[in-house]
Length: 245
Image 1 (tube, rainbow, N blue to C red):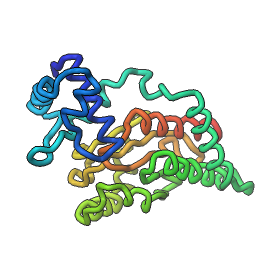
Image 2 (cartoon, helix red, strand yellow; image 1 turned 90 degrees about the horizontal axis):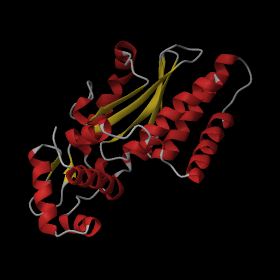
Image 3 (tube, one colour; image 1 turned 180 degrees about the vertical axis):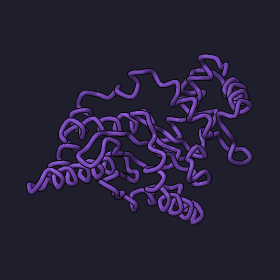
Image 4 (cartoon, rainbow, N blue to C red; image 1 turned 180 degrees about the horizontal axis):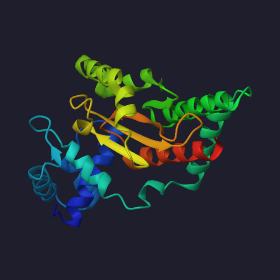
């Protein structure tokens, strides 16, 4: 897909602004950020819209990213982009994971310690992302943070809550059967094979545990989220669990 550098930057800004505010992003806001006229921004937005990367929710509104726009953004993240977190934030993130893992540690057997560590890492992901956290523990799926997920503005719509509930009902058998092969897997919106209409994204990391060589940890949240941050956190959680288990 051919887009200019400025169009790429505008798309990134729309995605990041929308993740932060949950409101469509207008040309006036972007014009101030890029130091050009609103008319110039509108022309660039029209191109992005024609490519299916952004959409206009309703008349005279700003623009929001589409699933295709999020996919383009994720696929074009610089290799180190997801790791570009201030040193203080990185330290705090590690402490949050360590607290979550060790707070639930049970010293009875290696399996019970592994169970506690995985649950703690999931709870830390919930705290750090505001999404639903999930992990496979043996033959079961552990979920945490459903209330946090449903307090996000997207889920004021009962239809969307029901769609997510239906996805969760089918998530465990799908993970067991499909076993995504990459270390980090990102399924955005309609890409979710078991929840095409749920308008959520699933980000999961595979890791080795005493339960399985193909255990998974990750988050499920609205398509509107900070992908570089969340991808980094999920990858970190999987790596950390492999290190300590």
